[in-house]
Amino acid sequence: MKGGNEYKKGLWTAEEDRVLMDYIMVHGKGKWNRIARETGLKRCGKSCRLRWMNYLSPSVKRGDFSEEEDDLIIRLHKLLGNRWSLIAGRVPGRTDNQVKNHWNTRLSKKLGIKKGKSEETRTNSEPISGELEKNIETPSGSNLSELPNKCPNGEKEGEIVTKEGSQSAIGELFFSGASRRSLS
Image (cartoon, rainbow, N blue to C red):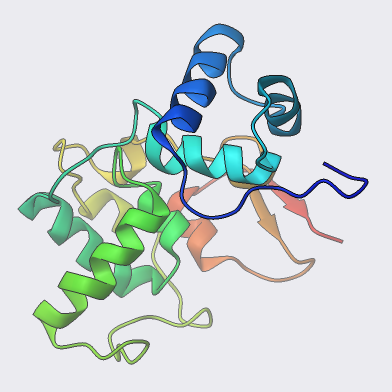
């Protein structure tokens, strides 16, 4: 809405949710700026995308986290730290925001971990064995290596994005034997 018109901010109304859901059901998701323009929503494309991905999408799981999900998040947090998108990509049906909020409001308190002070969290410089993903079971009973990866930023599945010459411990954890692409 360039040229003086402002985007609406704040809470979404039920009517805005309905308009966004109806449009996506007919035309599909993607091209978020076009969706905002064509529906008449006074929301930016990013706001439409986030609303769909985090709240309206039927693939988003609602309600309390199961004990199995809690255990998986705790184990992944020990390996990955506060990398919520990576963790959420291995917890089926949960968004990065749901996982982060659940960690900060419940799990870290349950474990007695102060925010950002987990001694058990690995740093980037510590090696992580590629065998660990085979030892971490998900709530569905499969191991991490059997789950599909959600690929942010348009990477191809199985591709590791690294800075030239650096090793990616997370990449080794999630994509052993995958191709690499340089960020340079």
